[in-house]
Length: 395
Image (cartoon, rainbow, N blue to C red; front, side, top):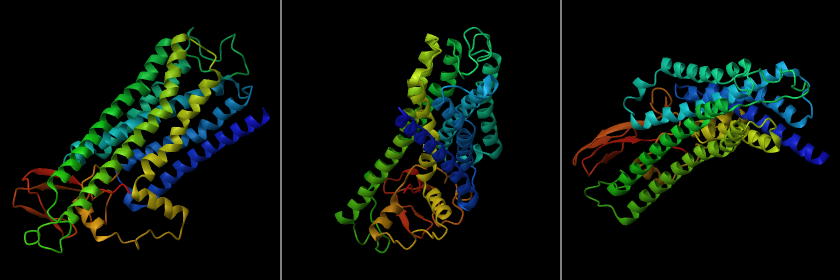
């Protein structure tokens, strides 16, 4: 028994340290890197701050409640801790929803994105996130709206003094679970599915068009392409499409795996008016907490600029891997690819200052038109279609 308690204590302590350390690293990366200081990353920083506060203000007391038989801090602090838990978990989930909506707008309306996503609107969204989080945490718990008899939890005459309980009733669990999980989950799935459909459509258009040549050192009209020049490009497009698919699957999959079990059990307990949480409740609760430790990886480390900023912070002598030169085929194929922007990188003026590549280019093409790209290469749309190409790397 003692060994299992030691293992449990070590596991929750590591999760707390990972949550705090990972989200501190995200905040420091944005502060230290000029390329990461942009409007879009306000959502990433807000998410990191929310998860950081969860790791500092909630997880240690959740660990105490899990590992100790008695709650030594009294009923008033117990209710405050539960309110903070509900508020920060709700704010984290709603911020993930805001990130998904931001990416959806960037992909579906790229030319209007800069005029739609303004600083004051981002601030309004953040205020709404915290207002809803406060309304669903402190207000009902302090007013006793979450209990079966209408009294404030842990303050009733029959409540044990050395126990910290989160009491539930049917109306509260239905409202809380719908507003803080199930409706955001549906919205996130819808937006990410649309983003994925756009990524697939972009890749199919490239493969169908089959660019006339993979490098610009030859004249495309005088030197028709051979099968050896087309196949690598098509293969690279397929690989990029697969990477976008895997990234989206990781984002939505981690969210569902971490939080779905908790909210299912949370809803069932509320509907059955069960007051004893049991072991299963603590297991799914800490699984939900694990999402706050995964967010720095899923929403930051998958981005190249964040990885570089991490490396510079953790290894002061880091200068990047600039000495590695890709092969001409890979470089040429990369100029022909289009990808959906999943993180910061919507406009070169904000998130990609100083880069040679443009983050997105509107290409109005006909059968004879050519567009000069930022690196001096040219491409021609043989189909005469008007299209929007997003040039962005997830590697």
